[in-house]
Structure formats: structure tokens, C-alpha cells
Image (cartoon, rainbow, N blue to C red):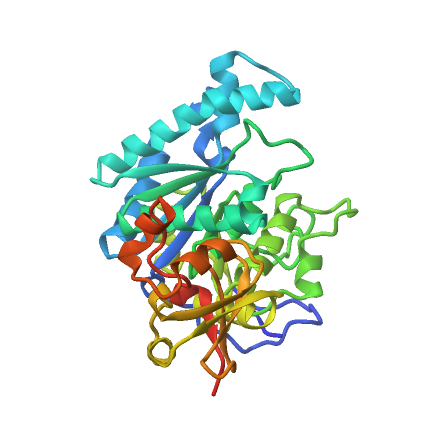
Amino acid sequence: MLVSLGSSCVGAQYLEPPAVTQVPSLTRFNRIVVKVGSSLLVDSSRGSVKQSWLEALVADVAALHQRGANVLVVSSGAIALGRTVAGLKGVLKLEDSQASAAVGQIALASEWSQALRKHSIVAGQVLLTLQDTEERRRYLNARATLGRLMAMRAVPIINENDTVATTEIRYGDNDRLAARVATMASADLLILLSDVAGLYDAPPSHHAHARLLSVVERVTPEIEAMAGGAASELSRGGMRTKIEAARMATAAGAHMVIADGRVDHPIARVAGGGRCTWFLTASNPMAARKIWIGGSLELKGAVFVDAGAAAALARGKSLLPAGVTRVDGVFSRGDCVAIRDERGAEIGRGLIAYDALHAERIRGRKSRDIAHILGTAGRAEMIHRDDMALTDR
């Protein structure tokens, strides 16, 4: 494992000086998730948004957007804003938190929308629950919505739906939610804006000589220990969830950055080489997704394709209903199925866009006939190329 420090190392046995890993440039990333916490966005003393800070951050987002990148924002702040409007103080009961979220989410979305509108960018509000990323059918629906918003060049403003979330069914923090969103959206970079500059080799509040790590190539038990264990009296709360987010994001093929969000233009500061911690991955979102599809999912059925469809798949095309000759098995939309050629040999696997009954009805038919056959408009592809992993042959 290689860990690079922003300055000279001081006796940590798992560090290997003097090697330094080159950090990537922000210009190489095309799909970026930015996570913003309540403490950065909301002035707790006034219960209102920090307007100048938000405008500076949105200017950074607009710059990324202008160069062609897709940007998704995971933003906290609904409860913090809503409780002020509702006049609620102290520790909130569950129902008060949910009511505060309902009131504050409108204000939060409005603030983001107005700030982005100044740069001629449309905002789209997306509220997620834990089930939306853990249940496959809902996951696919949410993924499709995010994809459509990005195709429209809108910036999704995403938050946990705290109006219905409970302690038992919630992410619990927006670091992990942001990592799930990055995975869902096939993002290649996740930026966690925080109230610290990055990951230190020891808690800086207790160790005057703690050093900031500039690069982490792999999340190891040693790295997790730096964030403090769950039972440690020196644990730094939010840093543990950020390390969990790093593990999730890098496994899905996305690099991750922890950066100080307390400054104006925090993303521009990272782009300019400002102090932060990069968590690197050797993979990319598409490769990680295809590995997951190809080897990690239980097959629920199979679709057989003709020679023309098999050739099209080999050229990187999606599987259309017209090329399907036979459907086997009982499966639901979003299940993983085998793709077999005319001889029955498996040529790939994919997440199918239709359940078995509907797939049987539209097999061999043109995509334009789907609405007439099923009585409702459906996906043109039976299996999209992004949801497919072909067998090496």
C-alpha cells in the first residue's frame, strides 16, 4: 500500500516515503458527484443558507458544467432550514424531524434552483430512501431518472427523503448516500466537502504533529484506523463515514476527494492543487459495473439471440427485442439473465429491462411496436449495453 503525505512523514509504520503518487486533474472527470453538508451550507445561528458561500460553490459547479461535465449534488440542510421556519429547538423527535424536513426541503431546493439559474442551469430535485439504492427495481428507476436529468443537462440536487425515513431505514449520513449516488450514476469522481482538509494520520485535535494524507491508493484496515474505530473515544465521527464512502466509491470505479468546504470556491481550490485527500481506484465505473454484472449476480433466466443480434452485441450494441428468439426462466425487471447464442452458448450476461412475461411478448418484434403490444411505452432495449457484460471469446 502506498500513502502519500502532504509533507514529510513522522514515523507511521505503514507509510512508505519518499514515493509520491501523482493525483489526477479534475479536467479528466466527466461525471462528478459533489456532497455538501448542513454545517457548510446553513448558518446555524440564523437558520438560513450562507448565500455568498453557496454562490461561490455554484460558480465552481457551473464551471464544470460549462466544460461538459455532468454534475450531481448531494445536499443536506433540509432539517436545519425547516426547524427554523417551524420554530423547533433542541433535540427533535422523529416526527418533528420529518416535519422539519418537509418544510425545509422546499426552501433547500429553491436556494439551489435560484443559484443555478443565474448560470442558466436547470436544477432537478431527487429525494431518495434507502430502498431506492438497495432494491433493484427501484434502483433502476432512480438510475434512469438521474440519467435522463443528465441527458437534459440539468443538475440533480439529491437528498435523503427524511420526511419518510426512520432510524431503521435510512442511510444515516449523506457521505454514504453520496457514495451510493456515485455508484448509481456511474460517476468517475466523488467530492466530499467537509469541515476538515482531508484525512490525517492521527486525530489533529489530539496530535499536534498530525499530517494530512494527500493520496490514499487503497482503503486498508490501517486507513480505517486513522479515522477512529466505532468504540474509540478519539474517533472523529464523520471521518469514519467518509472512509466507508471511499471504500464504496472506489470499489465502484470512482475516485474520491475529501476537501475543506469552509472556503469559498472549494472545488476550484482542489483543481488548483489545494490541500485535500485523494482516494484512488485502478478501475473505472463502467468496468466495475460490468465486472459486477458478469460475476457477482445470480442468473434468473436466459434470452437466446439470433446471429445478427450476437454480432451486433460484439460490436458494442444494446440488445433489442427484434434479435431475441427465445426467453427462458421466471425473472423480474432488473434481474440478471444469461445471453445465449443460437447454439445455447453463453455469450454474456445483463440486467434485463422487462419481466419474463413482457419479454416473451415482445421478443422478435421491433422496438417501435412495444407500446402497442404492451399497452404502455417501454425501453427500446431489452438489455442496454451499459447493463451488459460479454464473455471473452
